[in-house]
Image (cartoon, rainbow, N blue to C red):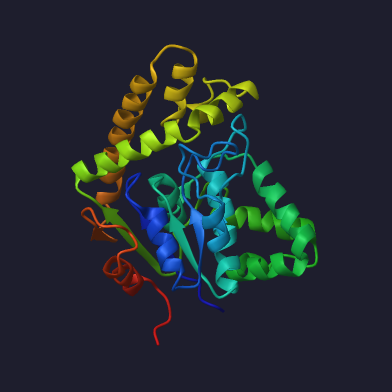
Length: 307
């Protein structure tokens, strides 16, 4: 039986440079990016979520962005099912699955397992039905044999309904209550910057968002019926932009509030990630993420074949 493919993760606080480093690594390592960001899953919310732009997506495949509309429910269970389904596909193309993002719960769910409780089966079934239509039953049956050989042995692999149902149970750890830790190699790399440098980067980025189209983006979302009370609209920059558009805050107040709230979030992210002893930290200081020394160090840690 083939061993589970390795997973690498690039984590750290917002504005630390994760996407830039991932793109620099991708110039030298064949990989595809699994985005672990709870805001980038929403369509139409691009700027203040720091969603990879068209050039980045053209340079390297990005997955798990633009999955749902802002008024649609989306859970860690939905993200986890989609992510785990993609790992084998990416490895099958001879590329490294690289998880990039700052949503610690998503990363932990993928590598450590997650108690799902009673997630709605619809997202799982819809995704499996789509894949069944696109790739055929043989592909799903082969995945079941890899992920849960014991279940595959007692499943009629010629029956699409039984195969998809077994994969649903496998995605939930076999018993419908959770997912198991990833059974293959896991390498985790963290990006760290001094808090003063991180605040500077957060401040510059917020200014860039507000002067570079965020107000128009939020206005469009509001006009499309996505009210400011929706959970995704509470994201950093979106809540503040909505209050500015409503006449409650000046532009300067909205930017200052965004910087403050984003900085507080960055501290919480670091608290989450620092407790994980598996993470190898790259201390970046004020250096750019495409600094050759940083890129070399990161690549040396990745589970890729060595010449």
